[in-house]
Image (cartoon, rainbow, N blue to C red; front, side, top):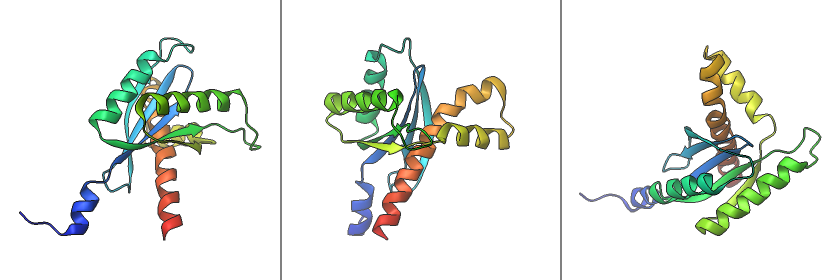
Length: 156
């Protein structure tokens, strides 16, 4: 079956991965192949804050199987815009992903993404344990969606 050249190029577009990095979990979201929308994917549970080996292995696996071309890691600035210790940890995490996978990693301002994710879940009537299971991957989707929207807005 023949397809128009523009469609073929769009189909070859590599997806993006969004990550909400926390001390106990990492929320994961993925873009559609056309880089229009972000969907929550999963939450990776971390055994300890100081251990990243399994987390990085899972992210590497997702990057390879889903043909990820860029990773967007939430950068948790304070509301004032100042950078704290969590920013340093997010930066180190991003550097480790980039070294391990050779995929470019972008740090993206994620102020209030978790609060926004909780609001989305509350609005949907999700509470308690169900909210805890979903909030990180929803926050990752919000981070990635904001990044995708900014790319589209800067191009248009």
